[in-house]
Amino acid sequence: MKPNFGQIMKQAQQLQAKLEQAQRDIKAITVEGVAGAGLVRVKMDGVHRIHSVYINPDLMTDDREVLEDLIAAAFNDAARKIEEATKKIMEDVAGGSGLPGGLGGMPGMLS
Image 1 (cartoon, helix red, strand yellow):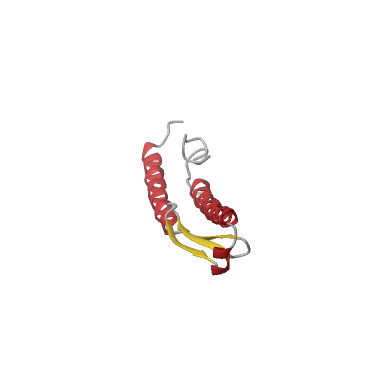
Image 2: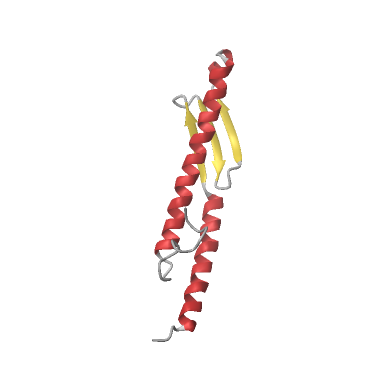
């Protein structure tokens, strides 16, 4: 049976549109990374840009190393949340791609 190239091209165009939408969705994500039970919070977008940092004023009198650790932990928490949200968006695209094997067989699309 010969492959239907018209159908394959249509599916490829649909996949391209889904990937472009996924990229827009990822850029629109905003998460809050939290550490120290909310004493330090950072807001990060889907392309890992930091929009704000909150440090509880009580921490300003604490040990500098503790504050540095909490800031790092909040950034890492935000980055982890972005990765989870991105993975979910890309899994949704892969699951509905309509191409044989989804995106799993396409190098670099999903890790």
